[in-house]
Length: 276
Length: 274
Image (cartoon, rainbow over all chains, first blue to last red; front, side, top):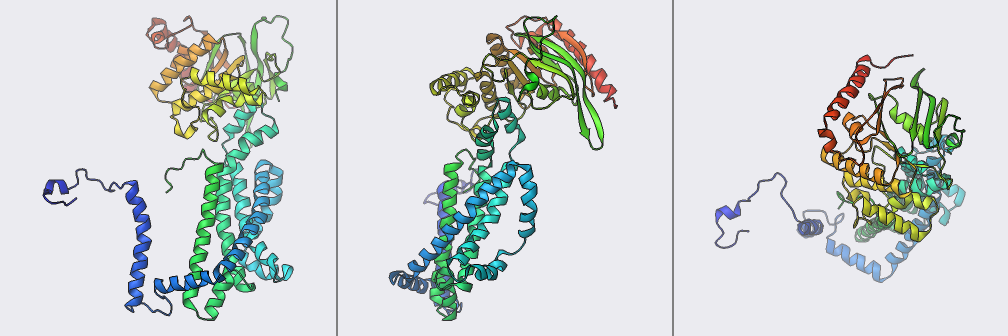
């Protein structure tokens, strides 16, 4: 803007706006640049001794630890195990949850029967169930996978039910006036109409499932990212703690992205504006 | 589903070309502990190709009457008869007041909806849906989703969806009430022309006296709750009509005054409690 020879008139923005007009490219750049700026600041702060390196090692040290863990295969080994538990738990918890939730939305008597049970158990912190799950499934895979499954289940089931209930009655009327039979109504109105909330529920569910899975691994596992985090704390290897945290964050990010991708495929009709 | 509509024998004095007959229909609604009478012994007949507009003060039960005709609600007593279609499908299609176009379907799939439910063959579905999309001026928008369309365009989709199944009777529940004035006039003209051209029998509910006079062959004015037939007024304008020219006709003003007088009387009186 302030090029050579630029007059004051040109420098002053022509239109005064409370919100500056920002192009899409600038927005994208800001989204990438802000974390980089934070990392740079951190690096400088660690090297200059402004922060305690024992707790906040410089990003470069973390990257080194990260690289070591990757090249020795340790990180990937544990990542694969956690990934497998999250995928399996999401399927075991999510698929029945969506089916039950849709059915509850469609049939009043089923809703009246199951809703009190779900409402009564929902407020219980799911992490509190882990000792019980250990008792039932032992230290094997079952206790961790079921923990993820429980986390996914609750959010997926309630959202799927709400998804059906949120459909405007006029769409059911339209189907009926065109002579739709029961199954036609389910196929052409209830299922597609509930899809946005079904996927919103899965998105939240996967996030919660990951939290509970990692927690379960910290408390009762010999492998997985949660175990790795816990043992890093116990051996006070802070760099590897940070490196594992970083990988766990990426896992969370990628799994939500996967659900978002699924939503783009299954709900192509949804307005996407307003979401970056 | 439409047991109520299946032949309940036309009476001996019936006109051969009667398509819809409503006899002494009564409907109550539960309002808290009280039962409110929404419709009180409503009766009328509609002959083939006629355009009937039902007007009345809001809350007079005109939409309820239409929903009973569509099989979406059940009357408490009285009879509703609609001439069955030759192919056994519902003999009518309905255009709704709100946004009733499925947001999860493209324009093409919305228009093809009724045809697919009727198990029409694939190629014929394409042809008929395409025909009606062009007919309502949406060519080029076949693959668009409703959220990409304006309110007027969505209502065009809804109209095309109803015409596509080629029903004998069209039920329209305040289809233009959410549109701005210009768009309303444009769609009034299009619907008037289409119904004339396709020889449809129409029952059209509105709260607009102007809309009633410009579109209808006859206007049924209803009383305040409980809704009864207050008067049936024939509209003398020939069809096809120009909905703007009709408004310039001196008889338009007289009709407007007459209908407004009837409705104002009802509005002033308010609902009669039973």
